[in-house]
Length: 315
Ligand SMILES: [Ca+2]
Image (cartoon, rainbow, N blue to C red; front, side):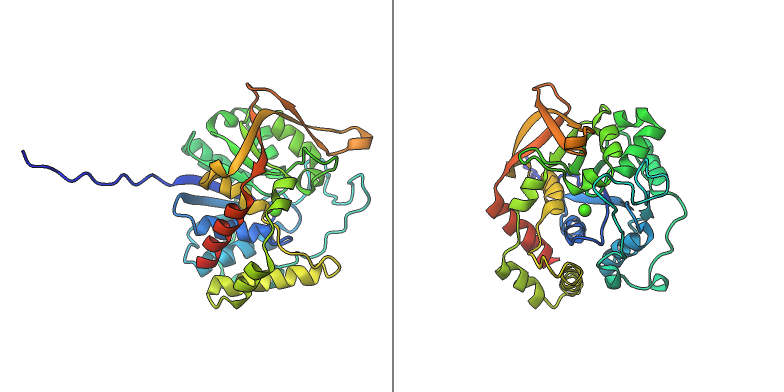
């Protein structure tokens, strides 16, 4: 009997959607680069959130164009918090002045990029989820306004989303985390839906910091991506001269959840958002083996940072 050689099974790439506030801290552009560098993932769309969503969309389009991936649609989403009533300065911890996004100058001019679709990001995401129920995992790495709006407009849509990965919240330190703080009402709406959610909290991102040697590897890179990311980091540092810190890989770790879940130690339970004056926008966690949420408690930081960074540098 003739033997047939068994072909290795190639896993089908996981469909993902990136919901991002790309343009402020550099970890969003690193997260997008990591997705593009990962054959395990199929990027079906990008939505932008918070503030200048059109400018953020152009920055995402720029990185996609560099890699001939401008077939991936990018949509501008909600610029204002859910209850912002068109204002950005209503947050309880003082006025929040939004300046132009730090890395805006990295983006190619409009005429070199695909025309931004008129479809709102939330509508685009909803259409894709409905036409591919159970297939696509959104990765939310900005304030949760788009995701909350998606759920509010069609609460049943959560049944068509296998799970959501969120970079947001903090459960070890008594503090608010930026993405939750920028729109706590949206965060509450998302965690109170039935959506299964994996959380990468602030402490995980703080653990995953790029070293000086690794950053210098990026600065020495002469690839198109290397040059773009170098410029992004330099613009970000210029925008925050007093801090002058090293990039933390908050957002790329949310993507890494889909690539290497074994890097993380998880705890299952339920996340809630506090609206008490003394702990406004803090996230709280109640352990529950049947809960819909998982929070990452630990990460294998050395292998995680090295692997993620090497992938990004190789793009
Ligand atoms: Ca972000």
